[in-house]
Length: 394
Image (cartoon, rainbow, N blue to C red; front, side, top):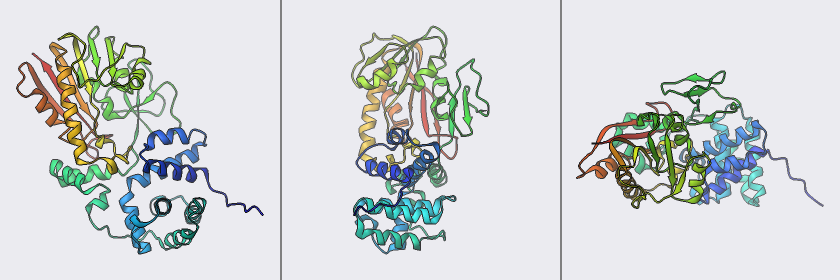
């Protein structure tokens, strides 16, 4: 006789599948885009909340698992651990989820992965869970950061700013739209301190406008573009900053290191090249009035929207990125005209990828000067964390 399994909501099923794939190295943003396209807006929204919430607060959820179960969560099967994380996140952090739904569907998730013997454990742990305050064992768990990364932030920015940044990244990021010069912003959008950047209050996104974080939109204005200039965007994909630059009538060339990434820039209707910017560039010296080096980086300024990064990045990665970033910037600056301006930017909060890259790239080289450096720190400024340095050529 066929046994009919209880109904499982699409949102929780999709969220569980995505979290399993993230454990295998996939990225949550890409998976959410792919796996929620067929869901209605309510289910898609809950799936997104569950995936990103669990990834943001993983240390807290594991601590709660241990607190209510008396077991080491690291010794549980992955599927059991994820089901408990999802259940605890709903019970502790989401106001509108009925407890019976959070418990019952978490148990069902485990059953469907054939971990039948663990269903009782999941049921018992979640039924014990309450909203009563549970002391965290330390700041790293409270702020949901790897201890080494929290230590770096406290050393670089002080305990107060590090704490504010970490707490800001535990919340869902606000949505900002790019409204090109001359376009009428959609009803409900609010202007910000960055020209052309508008805060979107939520709801269905209006057609004809693209989502772009305010931190990202703050970079291109530093180039001070004027009509007719030659502009190189060295690490252009996915193209948001390139599009913003093209709001000024300029001669633009975009490049990136793979055909797939360069093709994203080519879709903007400008010349796009496949270039490894860590090698000498195939342009004559002093070819460009303006250059943007929006370098590949750790992404630690975007942990609110890309939370799995903080569980993957390691200190040695910052060293590898630093070496590559210095090469990118040096090679780009060789193509800058006298009197020209370049902007080096990252969405990283690490000085090893920011100030120290600029210092090393300019060390011992006559004619290049760093005019200013800017840092947007989450919790202090709105939006993602971004660094930018404005460099001029004599």
